Image: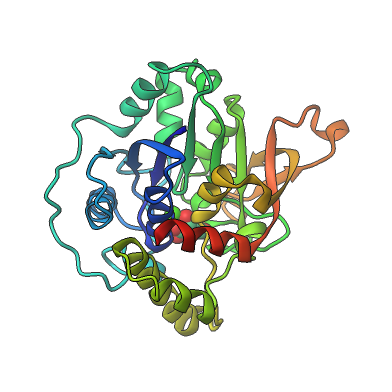
Length: 308
Ligand code: BDR
Ligand code: CA
Protein backbone atom coordinates (compact mmCIF):
# COMPACT_ATOMS: atom_id res chain seq x y z
CA UNK A 1 0.00 0.00 0.00
CA UNK A 2 1.13 3.51 -0.77
CA UNK A 3 1.45 5.76 2.29
CA UNK A 4 -0.01 9.16 1.51
CA UNK A 5 -0.53 12.61 3.01
CA UNK A 6 -3.14 14.81 1.32
CA UNK A 7 -2.65 18.55 1.73
CA UNK A 8 -5.76 20.41 0.63
CA UNK A 9 -8.17 23.36 0.97
CA UNK A 10 -11.65 21.82 0.59
CA UNK A 11 -13.06 23.10 -1.75
CA UNK A 12 -15.60 21.20 -3.87
CA UNK A 13 -13.04 19.45 -6.09
CA UNK A 14 -10.78 18.78 -3.08
CA UNK A 15 -13.81 17.00 -1.62
CA UNK A 16 -14.06 14.72 -4.67
CA UNK A 17 -10.32 14.01 -4.39
CA UNK A 18 -10.79 13.05 -0.74
CA UNK A 19 -13.74 10.76 -1.50
CA UNK A 20 -11.67 9.04 -4.19
CA UNK A 21 -8.79 8.54 -1.74
CA UNK A 22 -11.07 7.41 1.11
CA UNK A 23 -12.43 4.67 -1.13
CA UNK A 24 -9.06 3.39 -2.35
CA UNK A 25 -7.73 0.41 -0.33
CA UNK A 26 -4.40 0.77 -2.12
CA UNK A 27 -3.76 3.95 -0.13
CA UNK A 28 -2.65 4.15 3.48
CA UNK A 29 -3.88 7.64 4.38
CA UNK A 30 -1.53 8.93 7.06
CA UNK A 31 -3.03 12.40 7.29
CA UNK A 32 -5.08 15.12 5.75
CA UNK A 33 -3.48 18.51 6.25
CA UNK A 34 -5.30 21.70 5.37
CA UNK A 35 -4.32 25.16 4.30
CA UNK A 36 -6.06 28.50 3.79
CA UNK A 37 -6.93 28.73 0.09
CA UNK A 38 -10.41 28.45 -1.36
CA UNK A 39 -11.73 29.49 2.08
CA UNK A 40 -9.88 30.31 5.33
CA UNK A 41 -8.00 27.50 7.05
CA UNK A 42 -10.46 27.10 9.95
CA UNK A 43 -13.09 26.25 7.34
CA UNK A 44 -10.87 23.97 5.25
CA UNK A 45 -9.97 22.02 8.41
CA UNK A 46 -13.63 21.76 9.45
CA UNK A 47 -14.59 20.72 5.91
CA UNK A 48 -11.94 17.97 5.89
CA UNK A 49 -13.33 16.72 9.22
CA UNK A 50 -16.90 16.84 7.85
CA UNK A 51 -15.84 14.91 4.76
CA UNK A 52 -14.01 12.17 6.67
CA UNK A 53 -17.08 11.78 8.91
CA UNK A 54 -19.41 11.49 5.89
CA UNK A 55 -17.08 8.85 4.46
CA UNK A 56 -16.78 7.01 7.80
CA UNK A 57 -13.02 7.62 7.82
CA UNK A 58 -12.42 9.25 11.22
CA UNK A 59 -9.35 6.99 11.44
CA UNK A 60 -7.54 9.52 9.21
CA UNK A 61 -6.19 12.42 11.30
CA UNK A 62 -6.71 16.01 10.17
CA UNK A 63 -4.14 18.69 10.93
CA UNK A 64 -4.77 22.39 10.34
CA UNK A 65 -1.94 24.37 8.79
CA UNK A 66 -1.10 27.79 7.43
CA UNK A 67 -3.54 30.67 7.86
CA UNK A 68 -1.86 32.71 5.19
CA UNK A 69 0.61 32.51 2.31
CA UNK A 70 4.32 32.98 2.99
CA UNK A 71 4.49 36.53 1.69
CA UNK A 72 1.17 37.51 0.09
CA UNK A 73 -2.18 38.56 1.46
CA UNK A 74 -4.66 35.71 1.89
CA UNK A 75 -7.09 35.36 -1.02
CA UNK A 76 -10.02 33.03 -1.65
CA UNK A 77 -12.11 31.33 -4.28
CA UNK A 78 -15.55 31.45 -2.66
CA UNK A 79 -17.16 32.18 -6.02
CA UNK A 80 -16.36 28.64 -7.12
CA UNK A 81 -16.78 26.81 -3.81
CA UNK A 82 -19.40 28.81 -1.86
CA UNK A 83 -18.74 30.83 1.30
CA UNK A 84 -18.29 27.71 3.43
CA UNK A 85 -16.20 25.88 0.81
CA UNK A 86 -18.37 22.86 0.07
CA UNK A 87 -20.95 24.36 -2.24
CA UNK A 88 -24.47 24.05 -0.85
CA UNK A 89 -23.63 21.27 1.61
CA UNK A 90 -24.75 22.66 4.99
CA UNK A 91 -21.86 22.91 7.42
CA UNK A 92 -22.05 20.93 10.69
CA UNK A 93 -19.65 20.58 13.59
CA UNK A 94 -17.97 17.19 13.13
CA UNK A 95 -17.73 14.82 16.11
CA UNK A 96 -14.01 14.13 15.95
CA UNK A 97 -11.64 17.05 16.59
CA UNK A 98 -8.61 18.07 14.58
CA UNK A 99 -5.25 16.68 15.73
CA UNK A 100 -3.02 18.93 17.87
CA UNK A 101 -0.18 20.89 16.33
CA UNK A 102 0.57 22.52 12.98
CA UNK A 103 0.20 20.67 9.68
CA UNK A 104 3.80 21.46 8.65
CA UNK A 105 5.09 19.83 11.83
CA UNK A 106 2.91 16.77 11.25
CA UNK A 107 4.21 16.41 7.67
CA UNK A 108 7.83 16.48 8.88
CA UNK A 109 7.17 13.99 11.68
CA UNK A 110 5.22 11.51 9.56
CA UNK A 111 7.70 11.50 6.67
CA UNK A 112 10.92 11.50 8.71
CA UNK A 113 9.71 8.55 10.82
CA UNK A 114 9.25 6.32 7.78
CA UNK A 115 11.61 4.76 5.22
CA UNK A 116 13.07 7.05 2.58
CA UNK A 117 10.74 7.77 -0.37
CA UNK A 118 7.95 5.67 1.12
CA UNK A 119 5.49 8.52 1.76
CA UNK A 120 3.86 10.28 -1.20
CA UNK A 121 2.15 13.65 -0.97
CA UNK A 122 -0.81 15.02 -2.87
CA UNK A 123 -0.97 18.82 -2.70
CA UNK A 124 -4.17 20.31 -4.08
CA UNK A 125 -4.21 23.75 -2.49
CA UNK A 126 -1.67 26.57 -2.18
CA UNK A 127 1.69 24.95 -1.34
CA UNK A 128 2.30 26.85 1.91
CA UNK A 129 2.28 23.87 4.32
CA UNK A 130 4.86 21.88 2.37
CA UNK A 131 7.06 24.96 1.93
CA UNK A 132 6.97 25.56 5.70
CA UNK A 133 7.77 21.89 6.35
CA UNK A 134 10.78 22.07 4.01
CA UNK A 135 12.02 25.23 5.75
CA UNK A 136 11.88 23.40 9.08
CA UNK A 137 13.63 20.29 7.77
CA UNK A 138 15.45 20.70 4.45
CA UNK A 139 16.30 16.95 4.48
CA UNK A 140 12.58 16.31 4.00
CA UNK A 141 12.84 16.84 0.21
CA UNK A 142 15.05 13.77 -0.21
CA UNK A 143 12.93 11.64 2.13
CA UNK A 144 9.62 12.29 0.39
CA UNK A 145 8.26 10.06 -2.34
CA UNK A 146 6.48 11.68 -5.28
CA UNK A 147 4.79 15.02 -4.62
CA UNK A 148 1.74 15.08 -6.89
CA UNK A 149 0.49 18.63 -7.16
CA UNK A 150 -2.60 20.20 -8.71
CA UNK A 151 -1.43 23.57 -9.96
CA UNK A 152 -0.16 25.66 -12.82
CA UNK A 153 -0.97 26.14 -16.48
CA UNK A 154 1.13 26.06 -19.64
CA UNK A 155 -0.86 25.44 -22.83
CA UNK A 156 -4.10 26.56 -21.15
CA UNK A 157 -4.51 30.14 -19.97
CA UNK A 158 -4.84 30.86 -16.26
CA UNK A 159 -8.09 30.59 -14.30
CA UNK A 160 -7.53 33.29 -11.66
CA UNK A 161 -5.59 35.70 -13.89
CA UNK A 162 -4.73 35.52 -17.57
CA UNK A 163 -1.34 34.07 -16.64
CA UNK A 164 -1.87 31.92 -13.59
CA UNK A 165 -3.78 29.06 -12.04
CA UNK A 166 -5.27 29.68 -8.57
CA UNK A 167 -3.19 27.36 -6.31
CA UNK A 168 0.14 28.65 -7.61
CA UNK A 169 -1.06 32.26 -7.80
CA UNK A 170 -2.35 32.17 -4.20
CA UNK A 171 1.12 31.39 -2.80
CA UNK A 172 3.69 31.66 -5.60
CA UNK A 173 6.58 31.95 -3.14
CA UNK A 174 5.69 28.61 -1.53
CA UNK A 175 5.42 26.91 -4.93
CA UNK A 176 8.79 28.33 -6.01
CA UNK A 177 10.43 27.08 -2.81
CA UNK A 178 9.01 23.57 -3.15
CA UNK A 179 10.04 23.34 -6.82
CA UNK A 180 13.58 24.45 -6.00
CA UNK A 181 13.92 22.17 -2.95
CA UNK A 182 14.62 18.96 -4.86
CA UNK A 183 11.25 17.27 -4.35
CA UNK A 184 10.06 14.83 -7.02
CA UNK A 185 7.23 17.12 -8.16
CA UNK A 186 4.65 15.82 -10.63
CA UNK A 187 2.37 18.70 -11.59
CA UNK A 188 -1.20 18.40 -12.83
CA UNK A 189 -2.03 21.82 -14.20
CA UNK A 190 -4.96 23.11 -16.19
CA UNK A 191 -3.53 21.55 -19.38
CA UNK A 192 -4.57 18.17 -17.98
CA UNK A 193 -7.38 19.04 -15.55
CA UNK A 194 -9.36 21.02 -18.14
CA UNK A 195 -9.68 17.72 -20.01
CA UNK A 196 -11.34 16.11 -16.98
CA UNK A 197 -14.85 17.57 -16.95
CA UNK A 198 -17.97 16.55 -15.09
CA UNK A 199 -20.44 16.15 -17.94
CA UNK A 200 -24.12 15.59 -17.15
CA UNK A 201 -23.77 11.87 -17.94
CA UNK A 202 -20.75 11.50 -15.65
CA UNK A 203 -22.48 13.28 -12.76
CA UNK A 204 -25.60 11.10 -13.18
CA UNK A 205 -23.49 7.97 -13.11
CA UNK A 206 -21.99 8.95 -9.71
CA UNK A 207 -25.40 10.05 -8.38
CA UNK A 208 -26.83 6.60 -9.12
CA UNK A 209 -24.26 4.89 -6.90
CA UNK A 210 -26.00 6.01 -3.67
CA UNK A 211 -23.15 5.41 -1.18
CA UNK A 212 -22.34 8.33 1.18
CA UNK A 213 -19.02 8.93 -0.63
CA UNK A 214 -20.74 8.90 -4.02
CA UNK A 215 -23.53 11.20 -2.83
CA UNK A 216 -21.02 13.74 -1.50
CA UNK A 217 -18.88 13.59 -4.66
CA UNK A 218 -21.92 13.98 -6.89
CA UNK A 219 -23.25 16.92 -4.85
CA UNK A 220 -19.92 18.70 -5.30
CA UNK A 221 -20.02 18.15 -9.06
CA UNK A 222 -23.63 19.36 -9.28
CA UNK A 223 -22.67 22.55 -7.47
CA UNK A 224 -19.70 23.08 -9.81
CA UNK A 225 -21.96 22.51 -12.79
CA UNK A 226 -24.23 25.32 -11.58
CA UNK A 227 -21.29 27.68 -11.06
CA UNK A 228 -19.81 26.73 -14.43
CA UNK A 229 -23.12 27.68 -16.08
CA UNK A 230 -23.72 30.86 -14.09
CA UNK A 231 -20.21 32.29 -13.69
CA UNK A 232 -18.03 30.81 -16.41
CA UNK A 233 -20.82 30.48 -18.99
CA UNK A 234 -19.61 26.99 -19.75
CA UNK A 235 -21.31 23.62 -19.36
CA UNK A 236 -19.19 20.85 -17.80
CA UNK A 237 -16.92 21.97 -14.93
CA UNK A 238 -13.31 20.78 -14.70
CA UNK A 239 -12.66 18.41 -11.78
CA UNK A 240 -9.08 19.38 -10.93
CA UNK A 241 -8.06 17.93 -7.59
CA UNK A 242 -8.87 14.23 -8.08
CA UNK A 243 -6.25 14.11 -10.87
CA UNK A 244 -3.11 13.68 -8.73
CA UNK A 245 -4.87 11.05 -6.58
CA UNK A 246 -6.00 9.24 -9.73
CA UNK A 247 -2.41 9.29 -11.02
CA UNK A 248 -1.10 7.61 -7.87
CA UNK A 249 -3.72 4.90 -8.26
CA UNK A 250 -3.44 4.50 -12.05
CA UNK A 251 -0.47 6.30 -13.63
CA UNK A 252 -1.44 5.22 -17.15
CA UNK A 253 -4.38 7.68 -17.06
CA UNK A 254 -1.99 10.59 -17.66
CA UNK A 255 0.72 11.44 -20.14
CA UNK A 256 3.66 13.03 -18.32
CA UNK A 257 6.71 14.81 -19.69
CA UNK A 258 9.99 15.52 -17.89
CA UNK A 259 10.57 19.24 -17.42
CA UNK A 260 11.79 22.06 -15.20
CA UNK A 261 9.04 24.18 -13.68
CA UNK A 262 9.71 27.69 -12.42
CA UNK A 263 7.20 30.09 -10.87
CA UNK A 264 6.98 33.84 -11.45
CA UNK A 265 7.24 35.64 -8.11
CA UNK A 266 8.56 39.04 -9.18
CA UNK A 267 5.86 40.48 -11.39
CA UNK A 268 2.34 41.54 -10.37
CA UNK A 269 0.98 41.00 -13.86
CA UNK A 270 2.18 37.42 -14.27
CA UNK A 271 2.36 36.43 -10.58
CA UNK A 272 2.18 32.65 -10.20
CA UNK A 273 2.75 31.87 -13.87
CA UNK A 274 4.35 28.45 -14.32
CA UNK A 275 7.19 28.47 -16.84
CA UNK A 276 7.51 24.84 -17.94
CA UNK A 277 10.67 24.01 -19.91
CA UNK A 278 10.88 20.61 -21.62
CA UNK A 279 14.28 21.16 -23.29
CA UNK A 280 17.12 19.74 -21.20
CA UNK A 281 19.62 21.84 -23.13
CA UNK A 282 17.88 25.03 -22.04
CA UNK A 283 16.82 23.96 -18.54
CA UNK A 284 20.13 22.34 -17.54
CA UNK A 285 18.29 19.39 -16.04
CA UNK A 286 14.69 18.20 -15.91
CA UNK A 287 13.88 17.48 -12.25
CA UNK A 288 10.07 17.67 -12.49
CA UNK A 289 7.22 16.10 -14.45
CA UNK A 290 4.28 17.88 -16.11
CA UNK A 291 0.93 16.31 -17.02
CA UNK A 292 0.38 16.96 -20.71
CA UNK A 293 -2.97 15.20 -21.03
CA UNK A 294 -5.45 13.00 -19.20
CA UNK A 295 -7.77 10.11 -19.97
CA UNK A 296 -10.93 11.77 -18.65
CA UNK A 297 -13.20 8.77 -19.10
CA UNK A 298 -10.65 6.64 -17.23
CA UNK A 299 -10.48 9.14 -14.36
CA UNK A 300 -14.28 9.07 -14.00
CA UNK A 301 -14.33 5.25 -14.18
CA UNK A 302 -11.85 5.24 -11.31
CA UNK A 303 -13.84 7.77 -9.26
CA UNK A 304 -17.03 5.74 -9.81
CA UNK A 305 -15.30 2.51 -8.80
CA UNK A 306 -13.77 3.92 -5.61
CA UNK A 307 -16.67 6.00 -4.28
CA UNK A 308 -19.19 3.20 -4.85
C1 BDR B 1 -7.58 24.74 -8.03
O1 BDR B 1 -8.01 25.92 -7.36
C2 BDR B 1 -8.95 25.60 -6.39
O2 BDR B 1 -10.00 26.55 -6.39
C3 BDR B 1 -9.42 24.21 -6.68
O3 BDR B 1 -9.78 23.55 -5.48
C4 BDR B 1 -8.23 23.57 -7.33
O4 BDR B 1 -7.34 23.04 -6.36
C5 BDR B 1 -7.92 24.85 -9.51
O5 BDR B 1 -7.28 25.95 -10.07
CA1 CA C 1 -8.03 22.74 -4.06
